[in-house]
Length: 71
Image 1 (cartoon, rainbow, N blue to C red):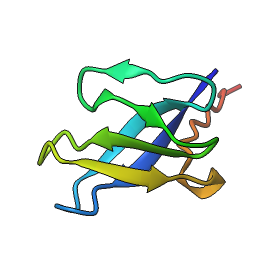
Image 2 (cartoon, one colour):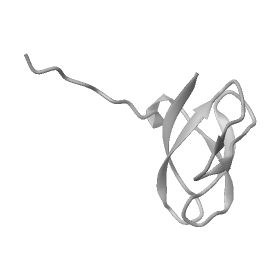
Image 3 (cartoon, rainbow, N blue to C red):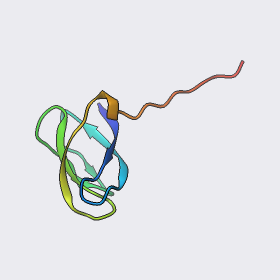
Image 4 (cartoon, one colour):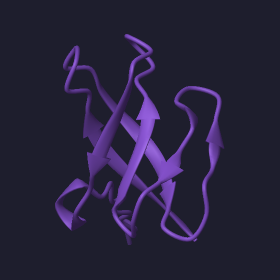
């Protein structure tokens, strides 16, 4: 299962969303191959500056979508 995380590039400051799985490396057209280094640590390329950086994500980085049903 993968989770979407909001991260910020340490090189250029660009903010983007990464679809990350703690179980396997994924390939994404925007960020290239996501290399896992631990359950919440990985590296990927920034879609803006194209430099590979390491990231550590927590629950506070998780992108949540809330849906409300109007009755």
